[in-house]
Length: 244
Image 1: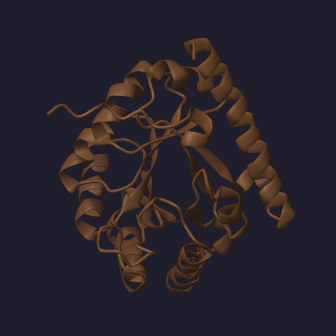
Image 2: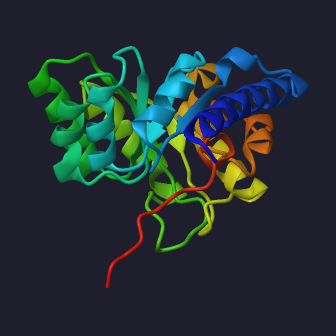
């Protein structure tokens, strides 16, 4: 498929996703403006991201530090970048230095990475960074994220001991194949209730990042404020072939 055809298809797909997200929110009496559609551009070229930007979209997500710090300088500064997934503590400074317009990290899964992010924000003198604590809702050892029983403790640490971070909510990836089930969403919602009660936070200001291409409408119906959409907008991932 020619490049311009791919780009036109992506812009059309984006509009469809946004309409579906609005409808899902309205069906359960939620304000559609409280749902952020993140266009997750992992492995996709800057030219394609630019096409989605030109279609009016501003919220983009990336999963790898090297990829986001390569792409961000090539794109307009008013993009709202989100880093999604596990972040190694030793990459915190690199990420923040390379992406001055980073809006949020979905994936703080321990005090160490929180402390590194807090220190990096302070050293760079940038405005406070919003973070979401990553919860392992599927119970698999291969998944990053903390156990639901430890969520309140980590959220409290970020809120009380990381003055340069803004604890904004929770995120989950879900199952091994990166789909989720209602149980994953329910677990995260229960964690939200626990954290709001323990820390005295208003539930209507609390962010949940859950739901991807295959299940984002259900995630919205169950309270998600961030849905992470990759392949439905951009098409299948194109990973480089491994050389032997």
